[in-house]
Image (cartoon, rainbow, N blue to C red):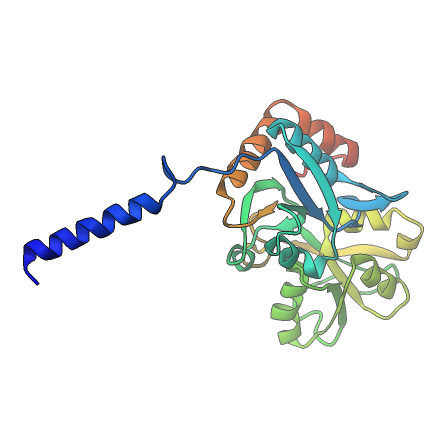
Length: 263
């Protein structure tokens, strides 16, 4: 085939491809409604009260939807299936205290952070545990909610140092086993544990040791989880987060739940 013939064939192919493409190129999706998935079992961030989803995550999500000028609906989803359900198009965004980690970024996209809090251990009130390094907790039985940054941290760091790690479907199940003497310590978000320690059930226990913030495990903060194929929705959430922080909406919601800033 001559050079001229090859050029003509390539030009014909290019014309054919352009003819198949939508006029004006691919257009971004126009979002008028956004379906949000959350857990509903992680107070004070998200929980169900009288059949209604409530909590810091829910109030933040509603404020973001108002800024984005979209109608939002909410779906409660068990934590271990929350990313698969997003990828299966059950909803469009996850607002469920999900930390932004490198592992999760391989599956989904994230907005910028909308809060960041440390992890810490709680132990029974009479416990002698004051040091929470992996070496200090060798031989201890430690609990965490499964499929979380806290369970990953325990399995990767503490189990390898000789601790026994037990994982639970919900945070309150781990807390219950701690209260009933089946665990030596539980690792979770400090604010979530603070909420629990203030209840009658949580009077059994206390904080101990240092805060844990290793970015390898605890990430960049908590963000909105979104499918990688929806970059315009990521941009919308990022803009809305900036707006609620700037106009004081974020502080109003923060102060409703916490006596300190979690941003």
